Length: 391
Ligand SMILES: Cc1cc2nc3c(=O)[nH]c(=O)nc-3n(C[C@H](O)[C@H](O)[C@H](O)COP(=O)(O)OP(=O)(O)OC[C@H]3O[C@@H](n4cnc5c(N)ncnc54)[C@H](O)[C@@H]3O)c2cc1C
Image 1 (tube, rainbow, N blue to C red):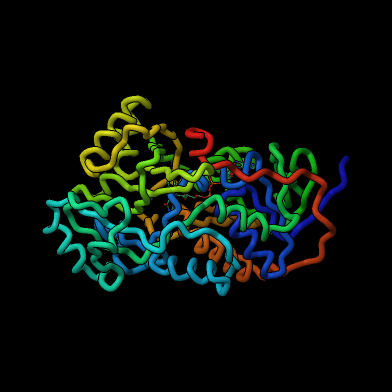
Image 2 (spheres, rainbow, N blue to C red):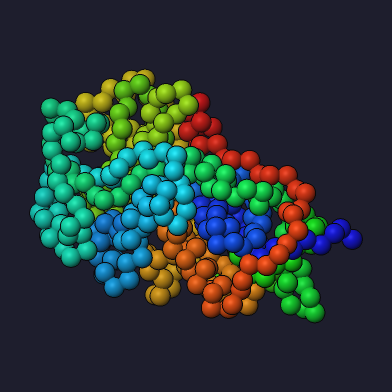
């Protein structure tokens, strides 16, 4: 029988949720171990658009009432962390844009007026013009209105790298997770056969959480997957743009973020309505065609002759929706020693950590003394999708 290890908090899943929580707990003096089976951030996190939402997008379709706005506080919390004065020291993480924008391509001014007069967005947006417009929209042919939101856009690979630094020696690579029980009670996990006891076990494994719960013999909370079919474009004519382009419906017609490729070119990463239901139903070639048409219509002055295109299918993992789940809070369920969480957004990782810390405090879980971490390899950092698909 291999030697038994112990830790205070055992975390499964090294995306933004697990890594943020891990860094936070270590700062509070807890001993932690985080198990990742593939690469750090390689699930949804590094495939996300990196927008630190403050809720404006949800206000657009009335889902944000102002009653419980955990998300409204997220840009401030992230900014403090990025400045090194917040709950984590994220100095050095690359900020791609200080603001995300709402962009209405011309005819929607009426809708926007009532939206911007609504309580949820007042004081959080201002209109920009001329040389203040995002670079990709600075063209004589550009018509429409652009509003600046108090929402940051981050380079997620550098964020994951910084959180991995803050993790010290607590990160371990392992693929087989099984329950470790004491008199029938869950007391830890077998990690690739190695027993690790813990005061609390946190599952933050994104889309892998349902399978983990099943392997522990637990059937709640239920998970749902929301498929997306994102589009990537890379070419010398692309300039930075971070914006939700409004289409008159409840969701942005397309959400564009722009990411730096290793060779110095910019990559547009396109989501929003384009990547949802109709986009999911299209095969890759038709999805690229739809994206090309959309961008040609919205930004006809951009010469796309040398642009290369690719698509990426990825599922968003969330708790199964019930009337109780709000779009602006992280989700955490706890049952004895086991805690299960989905941040539901990258931006809400601090909210998920806060909920775990509150549960530990409620249960009187304090940092203990533990020997060194078990001798397992460290998981690698995920490579950005654009380096894989459009090298
Ligand atoms: C295309 C897209 C765009 C998005 N854009 C944004 C955005 O702009 N802003 C925003 O706030 N949110 C955005 N999101 C949502 C955001 O990405 C997710 O909510 C967030 O990244 C989830 O983080 P996580 O750590 O829970 O999951 P993940 O990042 O998926 O991490 C889970 C980790 O667990 C590991 N794992 C799974 N099973 C096991 C196992 N059995 N053992 C060990 N490890 C395991 C996985 O390998 C993975 O590394 C976007 C999501 C998508 C898909």
